[in-house]
Image (tube, helix red, strand yellow):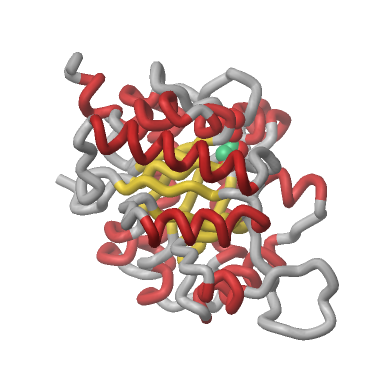
Length: 264
Ligand SMILES: O=C(CO)COP(=O)(O)O
């Protein structure tokens, strides 16, 4: 039995302004409270846009919510002449727990390299913000059956120079690009194949204890109707949810996958 606490993280991407963020988060919190959600059994996080974070912090603090929150990106630098960038120091000050790093949309639209992803991971860890490292292949790589090799290379590049103690705190999210926002979900077997390969490579890079500690999430068209079968796989420890996390009732159902899996 795994001792890893499952994590359901909602990546809002560039959706919901700070007022909408408050409404969405309140509704999510009420829905989970009504369902008596046990946050120690399944951790729930939201990753809103930067401009929402202060409002989210205020609500979480005022209502003592157990939902945690994170950012969608971070600068590789901690201060200086980097117009438009956001320092990990600022995120830590806002009570941010997680930060997504190397999302495929940033790799694609902002040309983020494995070296930059690596620098951002170090930057976040330096301020105690936990990276959700995103890796995964595009459709051509999958068709060429090079998806495992490709994804493990991204993993190794991102973790270059990271110690075992640091690596234990990193969350890895496997998000095949062809399954993001397409409605096409990888099968539970696809998710397990990659999660197992990621854990295997972590054991080679570090040791088994480190590999056993790291949570590996699946992302790509996760919904309440498919989450339970993905979560049934032994190496999958949660989901990084895009579109479905914008609907608080649907996202609460995803976080509560254990109850609807047994028909409650
Ligand atoms: O990119 C994703 C989460 O980071 C997945 O997005 P969708 O759930 O909308 O496919």
